[in-house]
Every structure is written in structure tokens, then in C-alpha cells.
Image (cartoon, rainbow, N blue to C red; front, side, top):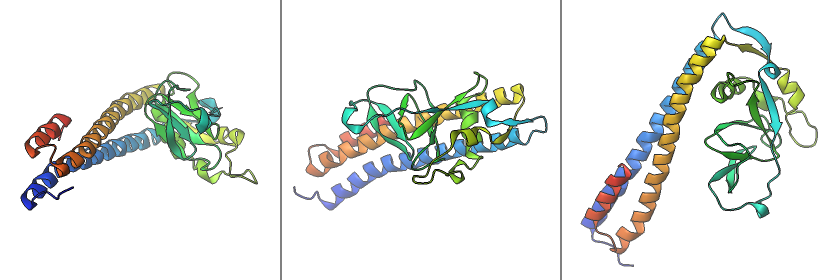
Length: 231
């Protein structure tokens, strides 16, 4: 494949660079949103009206299900192992965004998973005892409990469910919990929108590069495509 003239290469780099710059700006915005939620959670946790209880009083840790790679079907549902998202499948075990905790392997690792997902049998997925105990609150709460330091199964690192549920926690008042949940859900919706946009931008960038380098696509047309993608 012939190399485009230098001026053409520079124009191509500018088009693709605009997409990369937008992805970087989006990533920084998402990080700011998570940091805001962390700050708000700390404020809730420090509220003197919080009451002392145990994790098991507000949440349960449910076993994920086996899903060997050989039986997975092509789809858009995230498959989640103890180390995080590890593939995709056509069907979900959990039909919404939520919290998954490593049970074996990366035991105690706490993951936020956007959208419907399938936690496999090396994980626990987390349920609140009632609708007021939200997934965003449980995510930030579990991150403070140092579950990864509780690996105590002898042969393979593992998280003991009974011991985890017996951990002491501070429960906020219903009003503070509802206020935090409303703020966090808004920020998470923002982050999830950013993630979708970044995937679209990256796909556009990766599709444009070979077409531009081969001369099959003019820079002017690529600029229009980048603009439509949000760059």
C-alpha cells in the first residue's frame, strides 16, 4: 500500500487526533464523576446520624453461575469474573447495572458493571435487602471494607461469604441514603453515556485509519465522519 504524501499524512493525523482528544476528554470527565461520587459517599459515611449494623443486615452476596466459554453465545451482555468483565454472552443473569465481588481468584475485588450482565461462578453478585439500599451505595460501601484482605480459603484464595456479611458497617438515615442514591445514579448515567460515546469514537477512529491510509476515503469525508461521531 503506497504511503500518502506528507501533507496528507498530517491531515490524517489531525482527524484521528481529534477523535483521540475527545476520547481523552471524555475519560477525564468520567473520572471526575466517579471522584464526585466518592466524595459524596464519604460525606454520607461521616454523618453522625448513621447507625451501626452489619453488612448482612442491608445486603446479600449471591453466587454467580457457571458459564464456560464453550457455551457462550455472541451478544452484548458482559460476562463478569472475579477480575472484572471477561467476555460477552447473549443472555443476562442480572438485568441491570450492579455490583459484582470476586469470590475466587481476585477474591474481594469489587466491580461496578454497567448494564445487564452475567456474573460467573467465581463471583458473588450483590443484592440490597430492600429497594432503598441501592447498588451505587453498596458499591462504594464494599470498596471501604477491604474484602480483598479476607482471602482465607487455603488452597485457592477465596472470600468467605459469612465472614464478609458479618463485617460491621455504618448505615445512613433513609433520607441521606436516598439523596446519595439520586446523585450517584445521575453521575453513573453520565459515565455510562460517556462510555458508549467513547466506544463509538474508537470504532470510528479504527474504521477510518485504513481507509484514509489506502486513499479510499478523502480527508474531507473523514472529517465529516469524525464530526458526526462527536469529535
